[in-house]
Image (cartoon, rainbow, N blue to C red; front, side):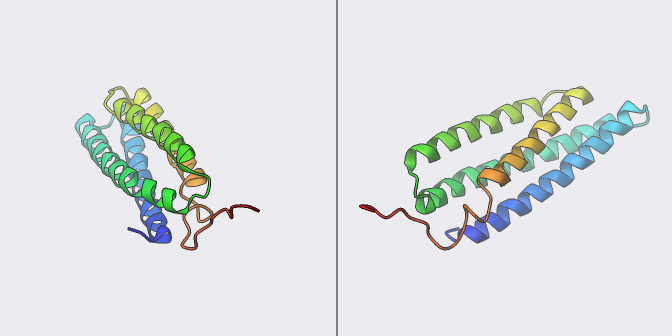
Length: 140
């Protein structure tokens, strides 16, 4: 996908889907905490969230880096640092989603929400992912 605005659109669509799944997990956790929930339903929904999150991360890591390299006038070092930190966040959240009690699940969901908001602020914005290239002119 070499069109930055289409990539932005797709990544934001995926974020919206992840948020719906997180909301559903929290709703199921609320029911369990109230003593009327189904633990197996929560486990299934967390598994669905984990699979969707992993698929999103693979898509993002595969396509976002080359697009940023192409359009970012500030260079390779910044992109590599951003991605290293970003991938580490993904790994940490993936591990947290494997834990059991609802309070830990809620912490994982809160961390994931903050992560998605941060991505949208710094990576997935129309100021960064745009179809017109921004470059620095040398010798100015």
